[in-house]
Length: 469
Ligand SMILES: Nc1ncnc2c1ncn2[C@@H]1O[C@H](COP(=O)(O)OP(=O)(O)OP(=O)(O)O)[C@@H](O)[C@H]1O
Image (tube, rainbow, N blue to C red):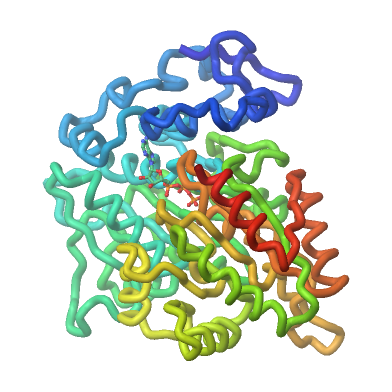
């Protein structure tokens, strides 16, 4: 069992002996030393460290329940354990080790949990929702919000898989999903996007009087005042007052400007936080290519096609019209690519992501709509055709893309390198401004982004094969 000590800032960190090595020493491990037949949990063992702050100052961090090493130690119902093992999970990942004992404790406590992309946050909150349902009541008891329908559908697939041996009933709160004449949702767990979830509450189709768990996945995005924050807050404000509701916020990123709002949204939460220099996983090797101009970005993307299809790849553009334009052009030139963005209708979006998930499409050209949360293990390459930028208002109040959006960058590249796997990201830069924006990202993350000559695809292929091996 891990031994924890309190540091000067009041964070609990593992004592030096026994526990996992911190990031610096684990990065010194030669890549080749990775054993090929380790089980999946071993792959992500000790690649990062988290700081845990307990809301309850009296809690004993040395208690055996503070961090678990097996799912059995959680005292879960046998049907849930069966679900976990049926999914092929043998032991908890680091975030699950740390978060689950705190999440499952009674009386329930709020949680603000941060861990890198692809490290198993979903299972932590899904297991919490499932373990808090009273299956004899046919009423919604747990709500989960995500920023996109694609992510809501993926989370639901985890609820269904993990709850396979339980009588759990589920429902979506995503656009155009429920039949128009529906009057009442009786499912135990409802997963969806904030606008649709609020509409269902407002129309009294979704009765929230029995809700006891409220989860925000990609919480920093869900609380962002310029984006989904308003709708998310409306859902929260509709929840019953004077009744304890466990609020759970998870993300790989919590930028400073949302941290204080998150603490108000989930008061007295137990907190699990990453260090600033540990925000991206080590398995993702980052490159950039210096393109002559915008036009050459397209030519280079086409020349990369063979590499893009070695496994699966996601190409991120800043705007929908760019994603459409390059996918139409590539298709016309005989390449097989799919494009996905928020202007397509729900059914089409579902079909596109399902085709990609099943491997029927190998290259997905998209926008930030799938930057967060999407978990497709075969994706080994991410291309930032356009770097992610923050929209800011210019002097005339018009929206202009300016500063690099560090959080979105972390989430975008995190679509590869899932759960200890290896991945590659390539950024296209084409002038001084885009190079500087990329450099700011490099500095913020403290990880090298290596240059690859645009003409040197052989080196790229070599590097890629070596890294992904
Ligand atoms: N204990 C475990 N053992 C084996 N595989 C696991 C375990 N926990 C999670 N996984 C797998 O790891 C992958 C990544 O998990 P998940 O999608 O929950 O990551 P995440 O932390 O939510 O990432 P992101 O920040 O990108 O949303 C999934 O394919 C999941 O099935």
